[in-house]
Structures are given as C-alpha cells and as structure tokens.
Image (cartoon, rainbow, N blue to C red; front, side, top):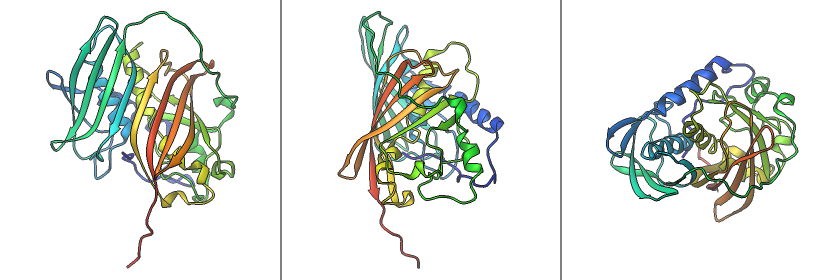
Length: 310
C-alpha cells in the first residue's frame, strides 16, 4: 500500500508547521478510535480522504487496534500482515476480527480489512500476559542524538530544487517528527548504502499510559519509508521516480514497552533484493539504547516502464 499524501514541498512553499503536524497526530489518535458495528466487526475512518491509496501504516495500526479490542489482560507481542490489494482512501475500512484462541498465557487473533466486499489486508496477531524471563538485546548503533540533527521538514524547506532520489513524501506533514541521520537531499543521502537510521517522535500527547495505543502508533510508524530502504543500494544507478514500490508483507515484534513520549531511533536496513522484491529490517531503540521492537518487511521493488508522451 502507498501513502495517501499531498506533494512534498521545497524552498519553504507550503511547509507544514509544528501545529499542523500535531493536528495530524491528534487526528491519527482520533481515527484509531474505531466504530464498533457489531461483535468482532469495526469500522475505521481514514487519515486523508480522496482519490489516494491508503497508507499501509494506517491499516496496520487500525487492524491492531481492532484485534486489541477483543483481548483483555494481554499486550500484543507480534504480528504478521499481508497487503493484498491497494486500499481506497475515499472509502472507510471494515475490520473483521476472528478469535482464534485464548490460552492461559497467549491469545491469537486474525483480522481482515475489507473494502467493497473484498479483502485488502489480513493480519495475525499474538498477545501475551506479562511474564519475567531472560534479558538480552543488540546494542543501538552509534549515531548522532536527535538534538544534533535537523528536522526533516526544515531540511526539505531549505532546498531550492528537488535533488535526485528525494522521496515524494519528503517535506509533508506526518504524525511523527523525523530527523534523518543522513540529511535529506544531501550527497550522503543519495549515495549507495544499505541502512537508513531516522529518529522519530510522536507529535501529540498520549492520553495516559496506554501501552496498547502506543503499540498501534508504533505499528503505524513501522511502515514509514521501510520498503524504500530496499532501493538505497541502487540510489546512484536508478532514479527513485523510476522505481515502483509497494508493501507486500510485514512482520512486527514488540519486545518491551514503547516510550512514545520521547525520541525513538528507527534503524532501517536492507539485506537483499531479487525477483522484483526487497527485504528490509528495522529496529526501534529508545533514547537510552533499549531495543523496543523489531520489524521485517518484503516489498515490491520494480523499475517502472517509461511513459510515452503523446
């Protein structure tokens, strides 16, 4: 699925303000309050209405929210999702939850997102009671802290022209503030590489210590720029605008509580590409270096056919 977006801005034109980003974040919180239709069936509104394709992160977050509404006393610890058809931002989405199993420690749910009578997305989610156990984790990579980096929107606003390889999503308002370790539009950002670390922070206050909601928001963020990371090793060979991209399947694991009231390092990296698909992995680290969550996504990565001008 793609992001339902307005065009990016350059040279300060229509640059989103912090208030606009905060409003976008509050709106995301609002659309995560799904409308119950009947038992195990919920209706979700969209971030942006219009002739756009739905952003996959929105569907991930809403599907996780729907599944969580049918579980008590357990936190989501893993999910596996498939993007089946492009979603239509002009239509609401129905989320049908199937209660697969309720055990003493784990509960399993299956969610299907439906538009016009057809499944556009499916997801299996596992929930677990809080338990003590062994503790170990990879260390956070050595990158500059967010205070030493400039906001991505401010960076894009300062550009006088769109450099090759700049994402069409760059510079638009998002529910998350983002600060890229490789500044957007810089020479470093367009050099072949396999990783793309970005600091993210939710732009609105969360209503209390709602860990279920925080995990839904992290699910939303986990689809931001993930599949495009698979194109980075080819940045110097193929212009980004000539690459067709779409999320195919997505897995996410929550290891620890999500501290969305502070900066989180979204460390994206690609391991392989073949057969018009790329595999991308990501880790989410709290500011203190704690590994919070991990994600893996396979995405479509195809050189688009050149268009003939009539």
